[in-house]
Amino acid sequence: MSEGMIEETHKSAAGGRASSAPLLGDDREPTLFEFSVPGRTAYQLRTNEIPAIDITELLPVEHLRSEPVELADVSERDLVAHFTRLSHRQFAVDLGAYPLGSCTMKYNPKICDEVAGLPGLADVHPGTPAALVQGWLALMLETEHVLCEVTGMAAATLQPAAGAAGELTGLLLMGAYHEARGEKRTRVIIPDSAHGTNPASVTLGGFEVTTLPTDERGLVDLEALKAALDGDVAGIMLTNPNTLGLFEEDIKEIAEAVHEVGGLLYYDGANLNAILGVIRPGDMGFDIVHMNLHKTFATPHGGGGPGAGPVAVSERLVPFLPGPKPVQHDDGTFGWMSPEHSIGRVHAWHGNTLVLARALTYLKIHGGDGLRRVAERAVLNANWLRVRLAEHYPAAYDKTCMHEVVVSAGAMKRKTGVKGLDVAKRLLEEGFHSPTVYFPLIVEEALMFEPTETESLQTLEALADALDRIALEAESDPDALHAAPRTTPVRRVDEARAARMLIPTQDARDEALGLST
Image (cartoon, rainbow, N blue to C red; front, side):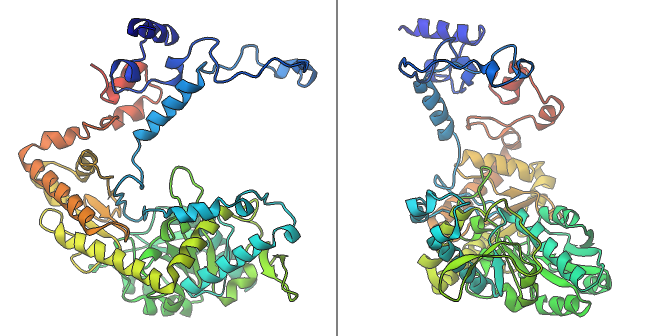
């Protein structure tokens, strides 16, 4: 078929609009409907003797559509090529540095995927009787034991399917504990630099949010905390190091003050990566710890999941853990049980268990000494980056950080008009994923970098060099940064227009994405 015939075919399939990306050299990827040709299918079954079924015998006529569902008619070849090309346009942790602060996007070892793919793990239904999944139950119990060792807690639930689910579980445990003591506590304290999910989880857990200010050190304002504490406080949600990448130096005093009024300490495990093998939340005085296995222990992260957010607790909260949970009986066999005052299920089954298998593999490969090296390298990388970027991107708090560093583009904005968002967009053209922008909210034009322990010194040098070039370009050609990214498959989107026009026309879409000619 000639090029002209191909173009005409796609014009017909697209209602007169030619699909040009893979065929005529344009970089715009067509939609499946632009590939569609009536009657074309991805596969066909051979003719057989099985009689056709009259669908009206199965469903009432009034429940049937009058017209077929509008689907694209495409060949398997076009379908596979379309999605493969789209996958090549995506940035991924396997392709390069992904320094998203607070999210811990680090390389996922492939041996963990191999273990999770073993038939004895992957080919098991979650409803299988305990007698037939003794190996799985042993694995889950070992995972719980190791996570408790890492965090300094007494027991854990593996059910929560992600970090936010772990947060809600922890707050439900907090509420159940106080209720069992006959206490009606209404407030949970959260720092103003906290993760955005924390206030939402507090509300879902049935509490009111009390916001705590950050002091000039970038830490919890201890005097403000003490003033906020009374008999209405159910607890405080903290992560240590905090979301500014700084270690809460007063954590023991914070714990004593909260415990003195009968409150509990909840540890948001998003930043656990910084302290592995060095210090444990339990040693700091925390009562509840949620972990993001997809952050800390390098299991897949993003893309809608699956994640895993186990919650570990101190001894006094063990009776309230979700159930059923795996146990080992006196005869050595494994089964299920629910704690005496269990808050019930927080997952339809037993959690995202294949993520748990990946995490346990990671933990066993590293061991305690290896986990400590993970934390030390993560902290070293972040501090190297903090010092290296200081000339153009000063740290929000000029002091030793932990695994992530928050810098400010505020001075750059005032001098050149280039914002933190412009820097992040321009960095995409340099082959790096953008850092987290505008978080924490208390830092002007915040850029949050978490290089993680998996990036080499050479990669960090290349990232710093790219950021230096961007800073110089902000002074010489700020308009270029306002237009970035210009070399990616999708250009900078007009976000204000996109918000106003939720269902754009094809021409409006192309214009917004920078594809119009």
